[in-house]
Image 1 (cartoon, rainbow, N blue to C red):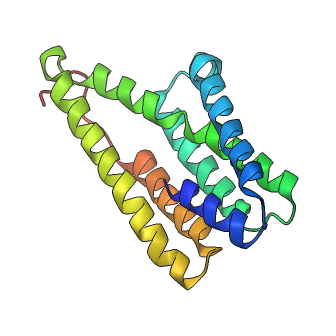
Image 2: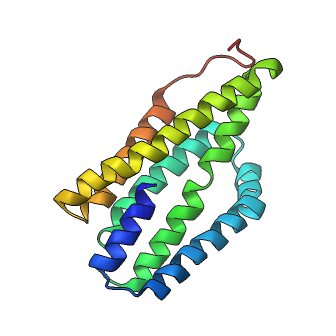
Length: 169
């Protein structure tokens, strides 16, 4: 969610884009998401056999990409970085769902997935709130803040060990 707030504010304040251009940008991100969910995710999973590696890589590359967005000095670079970020970040949620499904007993999957969704929803609330606070300091800091949070996600995904398969919930 930080990226949406960051894009809206940044494109109005820093890039001076029209609402039509911003609409095209958001539509483009939607197309990238559809492509990644239909074809891209399968291609990544087929090549990288470890769900954990996919998540760690997606967090790290997303963090770096979001950090670089704030330094883009042209519209083409800005759009390219945004679309690349969306493509990479879109890998995380389906892979997390897969990990939960594989690691929790069948009868507990609904509860585990529900808790995961609750945490995701909490992030969708806290992300924009924290981004709004950071934006009051400087609009460009939104991308640094989001990058920092993604890097924390990378560290957690890389260093936190999970329990064995089919653990009781």
